[in-house]
Image (tube, rainbow, N blue to C red; front, side, top):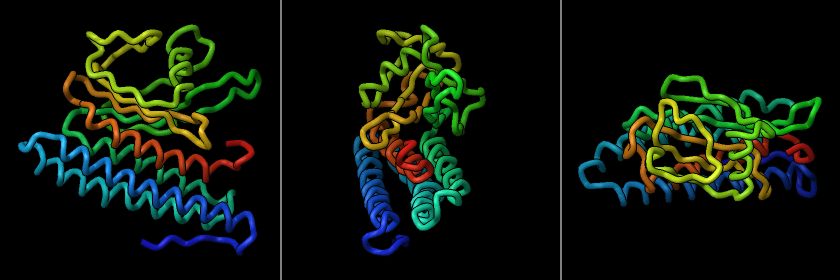
Length: 233
């Protein structure tokens, strides 16, 4: 796959283009590795079905997302919105079709309330099971504060069964789901969002799914970085 990079050598666009292209190429390699490892660890009975699902996910979701990221690199900042929306939409769709369970995938993006400056993880996109996801707000002395505290660790979280898990500080409702995987979306080492997959029944998700969620979170992070000027990222 060829990526078009804008700008001339020595210019900010050129340097930024090669930087983003490197990240995109790395994201492809990481995600492919995650898919292979996930397939390797699954039971033999599931491999044929999941292999077909992964192929669909790659062809309809991940590869087109890489192409849209490449387009963003070659455009001025003000013209990247449409490609950005497609990347975010496809990333969440890739996950929603990668599971046989009735999952829900939500992309959250960190935003600041203009008047107070307080932080909020706003819903940027969602796919899958019905049910409108809610934002996480800092300073609510509840679920929002718990999530922001977790985000500071910049590590993914897999909970196999909420009915038995002991999660210090977790105050989510668990409504409609009993298992989930969350991965932070990171730019330059700083959390700027979150990608979450949840499912209604323990066993719908397992540890082998974590790498795929982390890889798609990295892809979303590239889109965030290209969509937002670096001084505001």
